[in-house]
Image 1 (tube, rainbow, N blue to C red):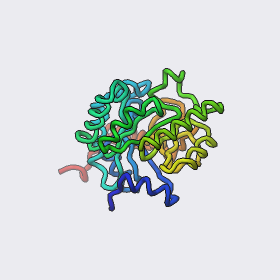
Image 2: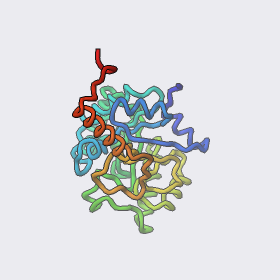
Image 3: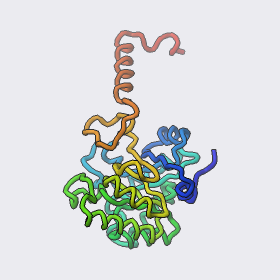
Image 4: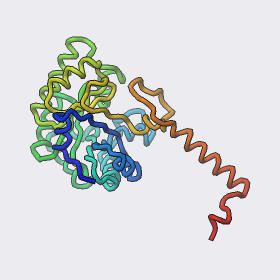
Length: 266
């Protein structure tokens, strides 16, 4: 399987090829997704919510992202591994942004990092790009800004708000990001931004007109039943009930003395 690179991802837009992206947090799932042909594996700070049961992404640490990135990087052969820079890892100073991005690459095996925020994050984004570390932008609904936004709400509804997001996208492209995540914005706005930019847009809750789409793996597999499913999520499998049924069958077999049988014994 040929290794996919960041330039390959950028080229997919000019070729008119859609870009499917999924989050990944561990080695076995990274292998499965890579074998299935997912070109970008995103090690999201969403791990704090779907893997650790936290209320939001704000308490996820850099060391935790490095751990998950290292596991994912070991499991992939072809896909590009993009790691989130968690809250506090790039906002405090340019020096910290550079140091922490370098750790994600050197210790985690990331091939690119994702930084939330448009113009407000430009200094950090430019500093990381100057180190030859590819950066993916992220604008619209930015989960690390959940308190400032007053919750997980669709952004860019008014013409003024839409123009601010559009200008963020322009400035990010100018700064040199190789792609931009558009989250939680109206479909028309996402389509307009996508048509204007020369780099790929990856949508999540931004409609069908982006160059690619990303979903949280646990959401699309039906593993997370503790929260209400967002409108933009399509569940491709009810894996929670499949796993639960297997576990119930195992319990019954053990309690009845049917496992292990002669076939499972030495």
